[in-house]
Length: 298
Image (cartoon, rainbow, N blue to C red; front, side, top):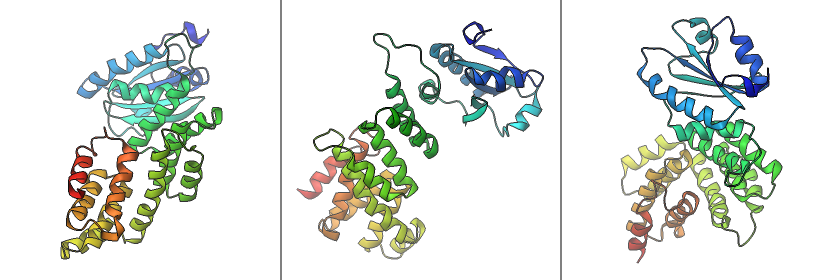
């Protein structure tokens, strides 16, 4: 029977799991929902999963496993809490998450994995789905998953600026600074993404300073001992930025600018500007910091 004729949503158990999930994942993506009747979050996640799977078409299916009736399957997949979702493709576990994610986030995770039907007028480009999915995984901290999607996009379109930026951000978090520089250099002069690429290169220095600061706890302890130590405050901000705690980094850098705008030849101001360009003015961490920085300077 072809994948198009098979049901998209069905129950599975230990007896038919190998055939209906593992073997079937050679033909289409199988999303496995580990749930239980008494689980409140499961009742929230279930309908969202079903809506996304149906909307994505016959290239994906949803297999539901009642953990009360199939504890051995939950044990095999190391399910520690429910709802737990495991995504299989070509016989391999390719993605997973625990908890009731919102529908938009589920869609962003699944779309890049599901073969798309021929695109009609008004449908999203599959390459855009890869980039968007990579961004979602990057925000969740799944660096390997994000890199895989960005690299897949670049394999098809080597000069896609959004994929180049996304992969450069992954490499920055992984500490591969040479790769960050190489990826940033591939973004052409005059492109809309150039400022973001330059911001990533600036953040290399910040990550390196954080690495040599002895860690965030060391910088925080030094600042606690002397709140007027601007170098300690600057290093603490660098450590926060390297960890992705952008709100703390911006707060500490702004404090430095307010106290001494020429500190380290304007390094705190430059760090703030780099985050503004990288994150965008709509990012929650950025908030009104551009206006506050302007007031502090002028």
